[in-house]
Length: 255
Image 1 (cartoon, rainbow, N blue to C red):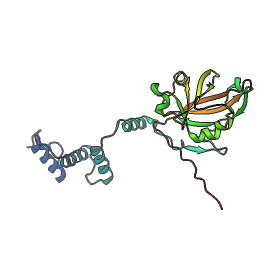
Image 2 (tube, rainbow, N blue to C red; image 1 turned 90 degrees about the vertical axis):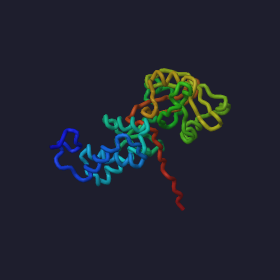
Image 3 (cartoon, rainbow, N blue to C red; image 1 turned 90 degrees about the horizontal axis):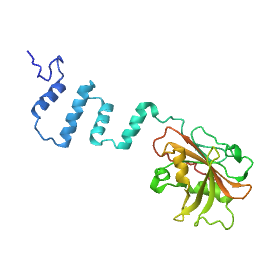
Image 4 (tube, one colour; image 1 turned 180 degrees about the vertical axis):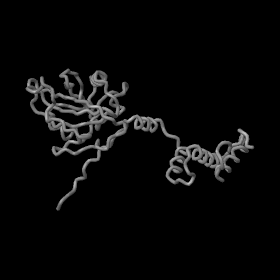
């Protein structure tokens, strides 16, 4: 009669693979295993406990990967987020609008910032452009909004005036969607990175902006009263938990 200490007790007739695994485990209690043997045993144990056939190629590969390459914290967070229903919708992709901007998802911002108090104060205005916030945009020790060089050249540089020096910085006024004003400085760092700094940290904290999930739309315009350079910024939060690379359309030369 089988005892309760028997590995096969209560399981009926065991398969040869199960018997082999149980036999090995009984004699390896104090044995130091090499990595390959440990992976094989762990693989066999997982398959037996989950009731999955040992010769299943797809599940075997997935289990082997988990043993050989433990998930990084970021990967675990993304997996847990997906399990909680926060997986990224397929339709959320960068879309090329007819007027030239790249925006994430099914989103088309208006030509002018939708701030009622500014409607009669805008002289010349850029096309809107969007940026996904990165770690350096929201970190306390390096809090500034960096902007893509192409977006700056296409949308901001045409509004620049003689005598304005980006190396020294230009005082600008930035508006949130409620019409609140934040004094900032628009400048260039290391001769190549265009940033909004100064009051950006306060703006970021007031709106509770976070990395990756928040996307900001920017309009740049000249104030009709004083000619000053101004920014209007709208933020929207999406179920995105990693940096998304923009795939810009490839320009083809036609002869």
